[in-house]
Length: 40
Image (cartoon, rainbow, N blue to C red):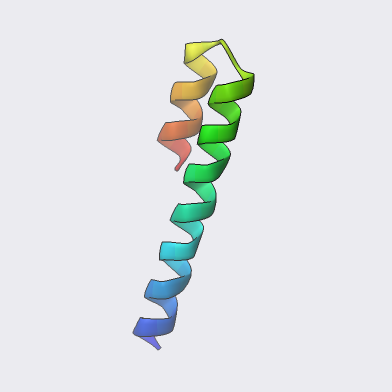
């Protein structure tokens, strides 16, 4: 159970990082970018 849950968290982090990277390409506003990073 913990192994599966841990894997899901890892996947979530990867997706989250990708969203932040994409957002940074689009957004010039650093505050928004920092908020996104904090959310992840």
